[in-house]
Image 1 (cartoon, rainbow, N blue to C red):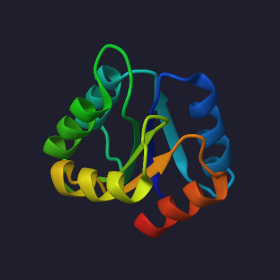
Image 2: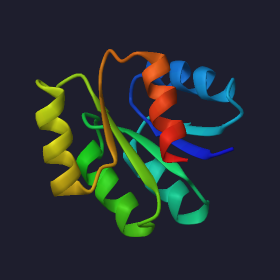
Image 3: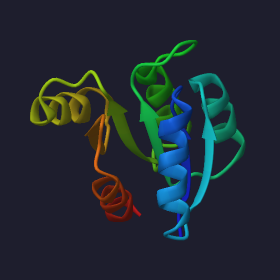
Image 4: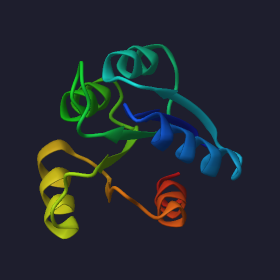
Length: 120
């Protein structure tokens, strides 16, 4: 199973993701900010990173860029409640920041699980 990093400032979202992916046998580590998430990736192997795009301290875009720079093999799922149209967001993020998938909040848990499992 996959080692998954979750970085989101909303504790409810982190808990929802952890519960869903733990039930599928994945190992989850989570942080409420990008600084701690990046530091973790520098010291530990991660298969998938699920990153909120809007966070305090260090924004999601900065976080995913630094994670991608640390290990280009990590698959990245960007999540945000600020995404207007999913198709445009996927295209824009994938091209500009090399994001593998995008989820809009609120997202369907089964869809999130499916995306993670497609990437692992």
